[in-house]
Amino acid sequence: MHPTGDDSLLIIVPAYNEEAAVGDVVRSVRQSVPGVPVLVLDDCSGDATVGVARAAGAEVLSLPHHLGLGGCVQAGYKLAHELGFRNVIRVDGDGQHDPRDIPRIFEKLKTSGCEMVIGSRFAETDAMYTSRLRSLGIRFFRAVLRPILGKPVHDPTSGFVGVNHKALEVFSRSFPLTYPEIEALVVLQRRRFRFEEVPCKMRPRTTGRSSITPWKSLYYIAHVLLGVFVNVLKYDRRYHSARPKSPGEQAASALRSANSPLGRAQAQARAPVPPPAGG
Amino acid sequence: MDRLLNVTTVLSIFLLIMVLVSVRRAHIRVEYSVSWLLASAAMLILSRARPVLEYITRHAGIPDTPLTLFLIAGSIFLIMFFRFSVIISHLRDDNVALAQRVAILEFQIRSISQTIPETTPR
Image (cartoon, rainbow over all chains, first blue to last red; front, side, top):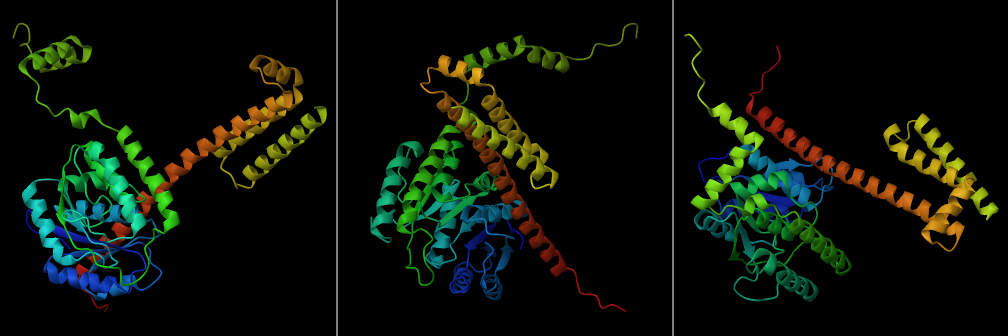
């Protein structure tokens, strides 16, 4: 599994006890984007997920113990980054994402120049693909994220996400471990990265159950809100000072630098060495 | 009051001995036993130094001396719990990073071993 070309793409499929669905997911991904490597991230499943994924033609990254979704996805990002892939698209192993949408996400990733593309269930319509409670939660987070991100995001909880090499580099170093989707948006925003949404279809889950039950939803909301708040607090001035300086600001900055001890030392180091006396 | 201070003295001594025994049996690492030893020693000193406790009660405006003892003990243990939460968080991060590294290394070993042609032993 090696990247080929400047627009190399890797599909990652996080999976935990998904033996019933992961085989079909891998096969349909390979049909939708032939020749693109598929990496199943096995989060220490207790069933035959690894064997089924390999039999379907995927490479498998097996975690030695259960890390949860964030740790599992980050392991995939780390490997993709180390192997030199330029783009990564995540497709969930439960079969809810339609792999036929992958080419559109990849195309948007290449042409828009933004660092992240989200396959959105609600980008064009406000159709309900989820339970009423979850839909309410999504609306709540839309409202919370709107002022933080500076633009509306229709489907902040979507796991159908493509990232380019810049976001890959960031995520391989820093990625939320629990409920990563919403916090990842704020992590990107801290670096002034951009995202776009592509309308996608969501299929009903055919096997297994969602890990987020109604009771866990309350914990989810509290946890994600805290994570968003902490990420907002981590606001880094370096990434937000990309505005080019005016000539006046440049002169003032140079003067400040020359007057500082470090600036003087640097100026001395740059000065030409005088010829030896009497030479 | 005296009975209460005697009870806290016994509890402090019990905690002190328990920590020392655990360190000796290597159930707790020495660096993590220091906070417990300091906390139990502080409890022991406060329980036996009644004038100090009464001085703190008077100056802090606390209505009751036993309440002062429990406030101090509670604060000490809260700080310790916070410290251990920090340690656990670091351990969790290290643990995740290590698990990811192991998985990546295993993946790469598997990839390499698949590319090496099998040789038959003579």
